[in-house]
Figure 1: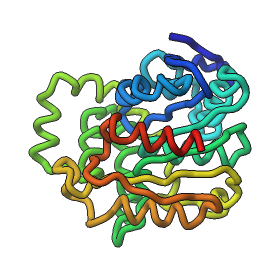
Figure 2: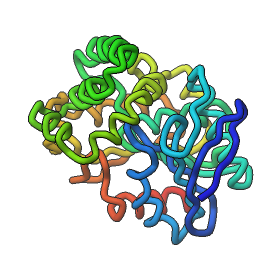
Figure 3: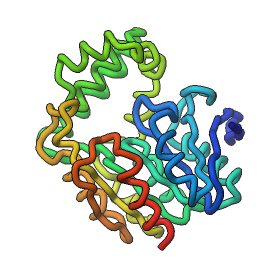
Length: 267
């Protein structure tokens, strides 16, 4: 375990595993680093993997006011700790943050992203705007559980899955992370890939998806929602490569995605 201090004084907690070129894993919504831990272990045979808790999560601080620029500064501090340059792999909304860091000029060698949920599918842009308004209102009222449920519904979870999650032992941990849903929303902006920013990315970028359309916990999403988002994202990045991993859900099996990432980063 380690800790770095971001530019605004916020402590950022991370765990380092393995040896080799540095690779920073950037988690998505309601993840405090635990979700990426198995992938870190899988990649640690070839890379020095830095799996960190984004600000406001687990052992990392949460200096107000929040801004995406401060999250990019967190990544800058981690890259400095790793030796001054690193690969980035971002999952879901963490992919948008990783790409934002590359566009901002951080010393990133390559970037891979997996299933960044931009609202490209028909009707999703309006739904995204409503979600952000409702999320802000719920968090302002301290209704953390309702905020998590709102997020799950946006992600396509049926009502029975939301109800089951509320009864599960992990629900208190999810409620503890509820405020960071606003941070993930900020990373995704208006729900569309910011082409004018991402076209500045000069590094090779891997844009990957699985087959989340077959995930029963995301059954409420439009057909190929994440595939359409990935296509739009790849179209605005100059050196992007689009790929898919058949049969993988939104939380991919580390043994399925690690070989793909290893090949891409070692090319």
